[in-house]
Image (cartoon, rainbow, N blue to C red; front, side, top):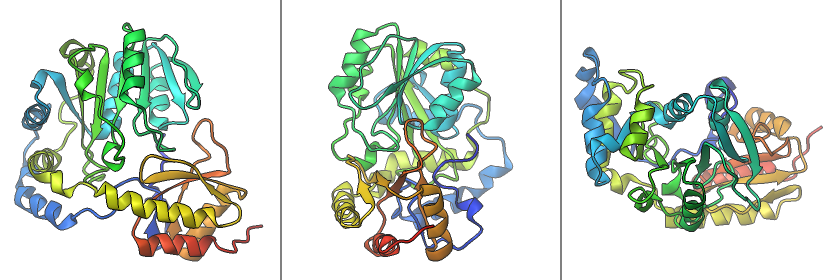
Length: 336
């Protein structure tokens, strides 16, 4: 899906004052990233490491693994496509609604797809399954017990757990402790959301050596650029204090939820993270355009998530000032 994701800021052609459509950490210290980029700018005059080897080594060290348990990617999305390629034609299970790139990647490589509603989810047998924890777009939190149950019940099925948003959800647990016991587990981390570097494109995957090698066979060289490699190494060593303050963020999110809940025609849905879905009586495609044109506000029209329709939109929690901008814009809303 080249178009249709949340952060379509490049398409608006207007001055956006508040971007609620992206789940990227809004309050990251950009000056620190800029300083690292400045010191490493000369690396662009040479080819990067073919498989981002020094970054992979740093990832392995930070997770107490070996480099053979790690693949670096041009964002998490490249890793989804690599997995889909490695399992070409597989019978694949996708809970819905969830991140659309799982489906897009699997469709490209002719998977046999089974869609199971996330509500009251019951897993079935397959070759491959993707889950997002916490889940995009609704912020659903998978417990470690749920994940381990799937791994135990279906040992011949590879389970991919996308933990791209785990730093935004204080109650979510990483399933990394399960790696040593389950060779059918792959875990994906994105560094673009929690450190606010989506333009650099950086992520990595952890897993059993044999499974990682199966996926690595389909990886092209130089997919991770030199600046991303250097910034990634810096963040793995020094970036913990740059991560979102989830306690403060979730309090602000709850304030925003309470305000929206008092507006007629808007029902915020339960979420374990800083972003959440809102059900509305309005057509969200019209609502999105209205907010852009009249208020300089961008929301995520969620109608293209499988399992949702044109009465859902997703928003991320921003600063108090910007949250109030959104609430004010939705008050006494009139759309034709």
